[in-house]
Length: 288
Image (tube, rainbow, N blue to C red; front, side):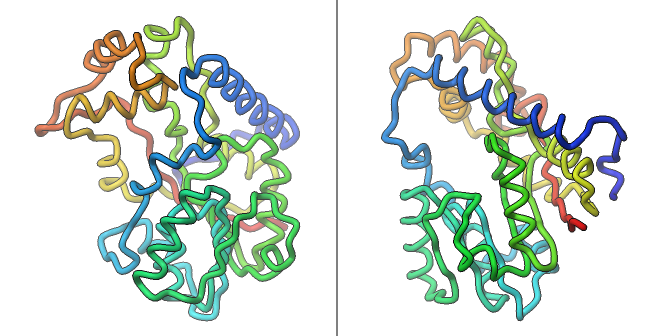
C-alpha cells in the first residue's frame, strides 16, 4: 500500500460496511427533509453539460494515469460513466468499453460526444449497479469508478459485483472527502444543524483494506483537481453551495448563505477558494 493511507488495523469489514451505509442513509434522510426543490428524478439534468470533456485531451493527469494502466486488448467497465469523461478517451486506446450510466441526461451528453468524435467501440448501458447482466459483468479486464460510491448505501454488494467483473484489477478515482461536503461549514448557519457527511475516499480505502484487498493508493492531479474548487466569482461559489445545501433558486435563506459563503471563502489570485480542499486519490486494488 502507498503512503497516502495506511491500515489502522481496527474495524472489521462488516462494521465498516454498516458504518458506511448508516452515513449514506443519514445523509439521504437529511437531504430529503431539508431540500426545498423537488427535481424530475434525474439529479444531473441541469448539470450534465458540465461533465463534457474532449476525448483527445492531453492535459489531464488522471486520464494519463488510467492510460498507463490500460492495455490495447483490454475491455474496461466504467461504472457511473457520466458523460464519458474517461470512457471515451479510454476507448481510443483499448479494445472496448462498457459504460454503465443510469442518468438519462448524462447518457444523452455521452452519446452526443460519441457521435461527434466517431467512437464506436463503446457499449453504453442504462443499468444501475450492481448489475446482474453477464454481458456487463463477465467481460471486463478492468472495472473503473470515478467519483462514484460516496452515496451508495449497499456498498458491500456494489464492491462484490465490481470485483467479480474485473479479471485484472479495479480502479477508483475518489476525493478523500466527499464533494457533497464542500460547504459543510455553513450548514449550521443555514439549516441549524450539522451536515451528515457522506463517506469519502479515506473511508473507501479503509473498507477495502478490511475486505482483504491488495491496495495501491496515490494522490493524483494535485494541481488540477484543486482547481475544481476555485470559483471565478462569489456568485459561482454561491450556486455550488446552494445546490450542496438543497436550497431553491429563490430561497429566503440565500442572503444568509451569501454571508456564510463569503465568510468561508478565501480570495486568492483573483478567485475564491475553499480553505479546505479534498485530495483526489487513484485507488487500485485486487482481491483474493
